[in-house]
Every structure is written in structure tokens, then in C-alpha cells.
Length: 462
Image 1 (tube, helix red, strand yellow):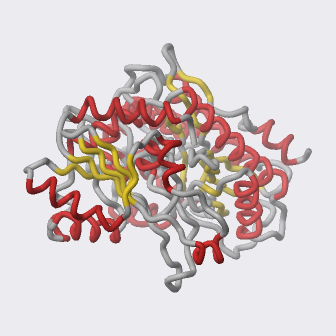
Image 2: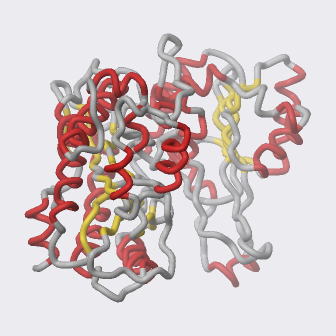
Image 3: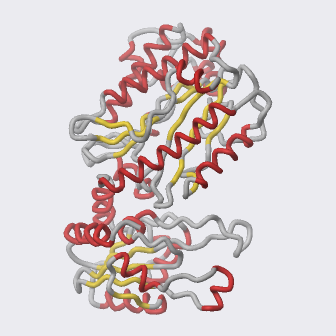
């Protein structure tokens, strides 16, 4: 946990924004994998962690704005429970560390909420992302299950987004730590991926590094020789010389802050000539977009800049043609770059995504696109000092998409399909780093990791 003062200050800031009503904070519960008592690794709700720091299951906190009360609801474990899990400090100890004055048993939670409703206090809760929490909110408030999502508090959600979007110095320190563990995972992958090993063998070794770092992986590891499929997780496929491996992975610290990086590298000791050319285009798009980052700059414009650089590079390879800006405006580049340039990152690897991408990454004046490609851009709005985000352009030769669009005659003014045919078995490449927006620009998070062709080949052969 951070200091008590950190959590108290965060809550005081939130309370000033909210005014009146009852703020409801559900903690997460243990969840069974294949039967009730065989649990997935526990992960506390990130907003609960942000305001209270208590990383235990089966808790609720209510902040009663009208009566200036903060109450932690939960039940202490019994000596019989200690038989299974060992000694655990009482909830009063955790409440003290969080700066909460009052602890009550979970059995009193519903009555407190019902009493607030009788007094016509507004109830504020965030959009739930777990079915159990949806059902609990329904049971506690009397709101029908199918109306819980619709009756979430937009005011509460926007206030939390505004606060969590700006990272404090102590948060940035944790994110640096997460990114450095992530970089260690990537160094291992680049050095030890050899002809004849399976994707799952490599991915398993990377997860061990994340766990040894004190936390776990921040999302399921993407590690594949079929990088043309954007979220292709590791399989029993054997990697061979000539393959390009795309590794997108991240570590989460014990404090639950995330890292998220991608590297694409050859299984063999060196890139082939054509692999070098495609990788150089991706790296140029990455460096161009990253160089543009600063407060007040729209991330959507960084995305479009990366798209333009990719089109320019593919024109040099003979895969695209025509006016670059017209090609990007038409969406022709999405045959090769289908996803967004990046996203916010913090306690969630896609930070606060459960609140909705329009609220987190856009504004009332800047709406999220519904067009293929742009609709996958999670973040579009102007950047602010204190934002933490990823930059991750890529080039993906998806044979199914190529065949489909060629048959439809899509973008023939900009795409040389006869040349693209030659790349249908190429795969995909992506480069991703994490950045902090500073007062005058941006700062790379974590220690530098091999990124250029020369650096990757040197690491590969070290």
C-alpha cells in the first residue's frame, strides 16, 4: 500500500467533485475456475485499490457524502479460516492503513444503503464489469438486474476517470518498475527463442519472470509466429528459423501497476532482407508518432501520423500507391494496420476500459469513430501532463482480409494487390513502448529495451 495520506487525499479530491449522495465501491471476490473453490488468481478492482489500497476479497466501502462518513464493510476471518490461509490481520488494521475510521460487518451493508434510499440520497456506482457485482448491486439497491448498467453514475465515472488519468509521482515509480520487469521478459524472449521451441514454452518462461517480479502478468501473453492475428496467444506451434515472433506482454507489480510492451524479432540470428524492410517501416511509424507526443496534442493525430508513415513505407515496397493522405483518409492503410496506435495504461493495462472508451479516451466534442481501423483506437483526445500511454503501430498481412478485400475490389486506387499477394505468408510486426506525458513532451518509461534492428540482432546473439 501507499501511505495512508495518499488514499485520504485521493478520496478528499473525489468528494469535492461529487458533492452529495452515497458512493458505492464494491471490491472483487474470489472466482472459481472449474469449480467453486479452485480459484483464479485474485485481482482486486482497480478503482477500489486506487482509493483504499486494500487487496483483499469480499469487501465494500461506502462513502456517505451527506453525512461525511467512510465505512469499510467486511468480515474478519476466524481461527477456523486460518487453518486454510494462515493468520490475516483484522480489517481494522487495513482500515487504519487506508485512513478509514469505521468498519462494519458485511451484514449491515444492505440496511445502510436502504436507509440512504429512504432519505432520497442519490446512489452512485461505477459500471460493473463482473456479473456477480451486477447481481449484488441489484440485490442491495432493488434496481432490476437488467437496469443496473443503465443506472450507473456517469458523474461518478467521469470524476474517477479525471483523477486516475493523471498519474502521481509514486504511481509513476510503480509503473517504471512494471515496465522494467516487462523489459526483462522481452529480453528473455529475444535471447532464448530458438529454432524448435514452442510458443508456449517461451510464454511460460516469460510469465515466470513476471511472477518472480512480485506480481503477475498484466494480461494474457501474446506470443506468436502468426503476428498477422492481433491477439494471437501462445500455442503449441513450433517456431523455426525464418519465422518472425511477435511478443506482446506485460508485468503487473505487487501494487497492481502494469507494463505493456511489444517486440518483433526473428527466430534466426538475423532478420531477412524483407523482414528488415518491413520492420524499418514499423519502427519509423513508431518513432514518428512517439516524437509528436506532448500536452495538448490529440492522440488521434498521432495515430493518423503513424498511418501516413506506414503508407509511405509500403509505397516504397510497391504494396501501396497514390496520394498518401488520400489513402489514409479513405482507410486503405487498414488492410495492413487495423488496430489503434495505443491506449492509457495504469492499474489496468487498458486503463479504466471498463468505464467505456468514449468516456475515457474521447470527449463530448470528439466522438469515437465507427469506421474499421479507427473504431479500434481506444484513445483519441488531447493529451495532458501526467497521462501514461502506449504507442504500438504495426503492419499485419492477414491473408483472409487480403483475399476478401481483393475480391471486393476495395481500395484498388491505393493497393497493389498483385504485390501484396507475395506477403500473405509474411505474418505481422509491432513495436510498442510506454510513455509518460511531461510538461514539455514525453518521457520513455522504464530502461531502454533493444528496439533497432542492430540492437535486436546483438541481443539475439549475445
